[in-house]
Length: 417
Image: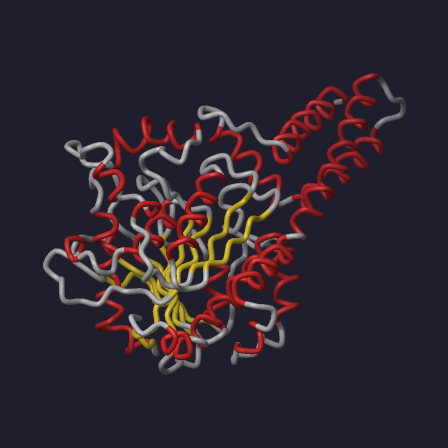
């Protein structure tokens, strides 16, 4: 019994240490992500379970042995780690606010017309207590709508307020999963529910996956979804003239490519006349470099273990075709406003890649580029509600509202847009 208690606490201590200081080598990146992600975002829940485990064990133990002492010491270190992780998560709201003020100005909030929901704070606390119960009574979801022939990989979901809005801005969400897995049903649900409850129309898309489908079929499909929004969005209350795009990881890559390739008609075979431009882009922990020229070890590992064998076409030329698939090399002055969000503890997509993209985008774009570096955040930190993701979500919402409400003013100062 004592050995089991000590083993549990020591195992958790390994996860806690990894959440605070994750392993970053190429082969260790995935296990470091899995352990660190859940431990970081569920630290309050794990603290409660640890306290219960200690109390239960002590209540059943008449005399402490060596294993008990080791287990109690490990539990104490775990609790200290959870407190540190929780405190780090609470910084996210201030970090994204700092990024917005830096890029948009100290009075940017005065341009936002839509007021926060009156029950935002209560709803946030409820979501944090039950993070896997993602639901909003004010939001209606229309599921499995086909945007092109081809089955489930060409379907989308639409989220809108139960009182169907009119002329609502659109948020297009693109799921991640390394271009080889993932689905629209499991990612960015908190953000879509939040924005739909605020009156936006949110569209979450599937797209064909590798290795059966090779680049650029993923991006072509998402542009097909944009065509669907242009043709059918108004049926759900959407204003197709304003579409913001977001996504995480591979979805962040596709979101950035959507924002930077509106003028590339080769990516719209058979529907070249459709306007696929987006008015704002919010990639989360996105992939921006397909060539590994940003100099990070993880980017080089991704190139050889994933992109060459599974994602890129077998006849793709290096580096030309790989650069053409990289947001880092598709930047133009006409890029829309960006909010780039990335965690400092991301082991799957190194933060150096995001910094390189931000630097190059800021040097070229005529629109605001906000960059929120979220301390202690792992990859996929926003999949379910947590203290960290709740703070980031509300910052993203403010950015989206700002881009929508200032669009006309920005157009008058950027004639080419």
